[in-house]
Amino acid sequence: MQQTSATDLQTIRAALEANSRLTSLSGAALIASGVLAFLAAGFTAQAGAAEPMARLTLSTTLLHKLVILWGSTLLLSVTLNLLGMMYRARKDGQPLAARLGRRVLFAMLPALAVGGALTAGLTLQGHLDIIFGVWMLCYGAALIAASAHSLTSVRMLGIFTLLGGVLGVIPGLNLDFVMYTSTFGAGHFLLGVWVGVRYGW
Image (cartoon, rainbow, N blue to C red; front, side, top):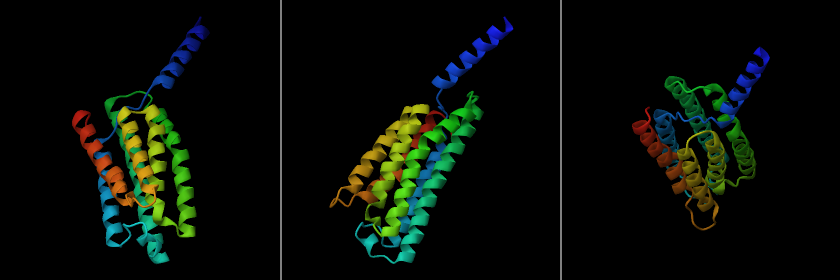
């Protein structure tokens, strides 16, 4: 009888884990991510690297510094949001927060790893004219993957970012920097305000 009860409890727990979602987003972390993206965009524009063709003529040293700036901004944003989600989940008393947080992280890792590999390849070859579009495509895919274990609003931001990435890699449109600022900057900031007002900071 005791063994049967223990087995039933394990089955119930496994079912709950499989169907649970990490619903506690941090409005403050999302807003901070948007601010970081705006700052990175400002430094990029000041360095004269806003236009795709301009990034092909910049010095190697400056390009490497910009890649470090952009990559650090992305990694810091992802870290802030994961930590914010875990903090809110514990604060809200959401069960299984740690395991759900790991699921979100592991869901995002493949797309982020692809983005890192493409960044290294494009940097070594000096083809940073499409770098923003590549990042938006990879980050959008990461958000959509993470949304399987989180809120629908994460999926919407992911779709918006993916569309921005598509526009960013189309030759002649020159929309990559505008879409980067819109998705990473305004997208995170506005989503953070909405989440903060509706669910808490």
